[in-house]
Image (tube, rainbow, N blue to C red; front, side, top):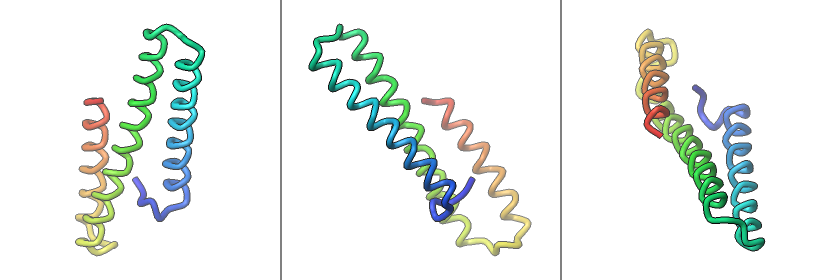
Length: 96
């Protein structure tokens, strides 16, 4: 896990948001073209999942930043915190 100050993490979040933006445009197009509600609802579900996973990524980033400020960078506890955060992210991801 990396903070959003990291270029790779920032690019990942931006790409996720761009995908969700494209999905929302697709939903708008489907509505304008009169697509069946079932198909539209399936796309809404995909958009929600994309936004939920992006929100989870941002929440984990926040937690990592806040906890990282409390511990010295070379601390053995830092390794333990990183492992706990990774486990927590995996558990929360399953809830979506």
